[in-house]
Structure formats: structure tokens, C-alpha cells
Image 1 (cartoon, one colour):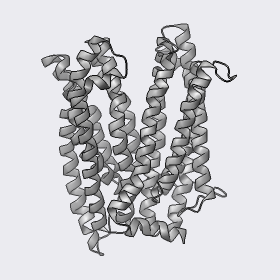
Image 2 (tube, one colour):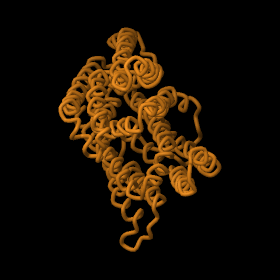
Image 3 (cartoon, one colour):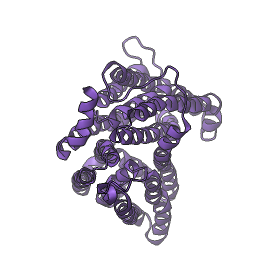
Length: 460
């Protein structure tokens, strides 16, 4: 009965109600995550500049953990939703079981890095004994304890693939709130807890991830779900793994290249001033409150598109995609208005210097011009992933965050200095959107439009 209800939800519920009922929990939980990122940095900064620098050095490793876990989860969610849409229950259950298996395998890689790679990695950047010690402590705790994060995301994406967005939201909020509460307690030593400094921040993160994982596993195993994980007698199946990573690997790379883009932009901006680099970092913290709701919308849209693609329902697919694009454009439009009209207020949250305000006002107004084309690009990328074309998502992401933006930034910096550098963002976003629209037209013509013809099977 539960299984039938969940399948019917994706197959027959009115698209507007379905999309927003699935997206709103993810949007809310991702906003909580954006808040956590800012609060966490605020607490660590009170320990001093070296403490914040130590955490910053480890941030690329944390980004890789997120990239691998979420990217694998995207492939997992896409495969499960497609198999459910095709009414292939056994294969859907098998895919869900592989999610836990791949989470453990991914953790082993990062745990090994934590044990043998931490000191060489931190040592390559550390300029003081405290920075080296604090950086090593934070990196080792984060990597060895990343098991909880990997399993939490695998359970989350499994439930989201069936249309259940509320349980994952509860798990995410539990983890983030636990982290926020424990941060000051473990960093500064309140309520009898020893003051652990940077190590306390890492432990608070890991404990938060443990509670998030525990909540997600409870819902996954204790509540009836449309898919069932069978760990007893489990044997890895290479076809399932290949199907997961055909979508998941491009998503992993897409998220990982964000760190490369940050490194490249920092190298360009530091030639102008340290304040320019600081402004760039502030922008990324601020823009997360605009982009996170769109990514939550993305999570709600993915299983709808995947299920109805597998079920060969073109009308529901296109209705959901169009509504997703419109909704994303509205969110990004509101963000654009805020960044254009109140950049100084936004910068004021971070107690900026006069130089940062001067640079930042222009930067925020210029970079935010990319918001509207980004809204369409993100939603069409969801279509690529849902139809098993993860490589196209990867290609567009490479255009946006690497192939176009860094060369444009270098050229613009030579032509017009710092003021023109910021235009690399809207220009790269606009050019990559053109590629997205070409790919979308191809997928629609060759795979989505023929769904109404029972003779032509979609390429899965």
C-alpha cells in the first residue's frame, strides 16, 4: 500500500503541488546549511586569524567530501527513480543497497588520506607551528569521521528518489542544528567541556553529521519505504555501479571543479589586493542564500523528471521542467534585486573595511547579473541528469566554472583591471547557458518527444 501510494504520488499528483511539496523541505534544509556555514566561520574567527586560516586550508578537502557524497547520491537518486518509474522494483532495491556500499568505499579513501596525507597536505601551506598543528587536527578529524556524512547523504538521496523530501529535511536540520549548538561549547569550553579550539569545531561537525545520519537511517529502516536496502548477502554489481556513476561521476567533478575555480580566481584577485580576495569569499557566503533554494528545487525536480522519464510520460516531464525553470527564475530574480539595491548592507554583515566596501559594492552588483541565466542552466542540468546524460551537466559546469570563467577573468583583468574582472561571471554564465539550451533541444528531440510513441524506447 505504501509503495503504491509513493509511486502514485510521482505519477499522478498535480505537478505544481508535487514539485513544491518535494522541493520546499530540501530548500529549507539547505538554507539551514548555508546559515551553519556562516555561523561556523564566525565562531572559529574568534580564535584568531591562524585558526580561521587552518580551517580554510582544509576547506578544499571538505568540498571534495561533499562532492563525492552528493555526486554519488545524485547518480543513486537518478537510477532509483528511473527504475521505480519502469516498475523494476528489484533493480531499485539493489541500487539503494549499493548506495550504502559506495558510501563506505568512499569513506575508506578519505580516511586513508586523513591518516597518511594530512601532514604533507597541511605542511605545504602552513607558515607557523600553530597553523600546522591546528590544520592537521582539523583535517584528520574531518576525514576520518566523514563516514557519517557519506552514509547520511546516501540515505537522504535514497529517500528523495522516491519522492520523500520531509525525512531528509529532518535529518539535515538535526545535523546542522546540533553542529551550531556544539560549536561554541566545544570550541570555547562551556558547560564543563574542555576548550578544544579548532579541534572542537571539527568534532562538533562530525557529531552533527552522526546525528543527521542516525535520523536518516531511522527513517530509512524503521519507516516503510518504496525501496528496501538488503545488506545481508549483498554482492556488488558492476552494472549498478556503472549506472550510478554514469550520472554521479560528472556530478562529482562538477562540484569538485568549484574549488579549482576558487583557487584560480584567488590567484587572479590577489594581484590586485587582499581585500579583493576577501570580497570574493564574502560573495560566496552571501550567494549561497540565493543558490541554495534553487538547489533544493533541483532536488525536488530530479525524481519527478527521472520517474516520469522512466514511465514514458512526456507531458508531466515537460510541465515539471517548465515550472522548475519559472520558479528558479523567480528566486534568482529576487536575489538579483537584493544584490543590486542593498550590496553595502550585505557586506556590513562581515564588518568590512572601507576598501572592501568600495570593491564589494561593485563586485556584488556585477556578479549577481549571472543569477538569471544560472537559474535556467541549473534546471536544464537537472534534465540532463534525470535522463542519464550526466556528462552534459559536467560539460556545462566545466564551461561555467573553469573553461570560460578563468580565461575571461584573466583577459578582463588585463583590459580593465579589477572592475572588469567581475564581469567574467555573467559572461561565462550566459555563454554556458547557450550550450545548455542546445543540449536541451537535442535531448527533447531525440529522447523526450518520442516517449509518446511506445515503439521507441528511451536511451537509459
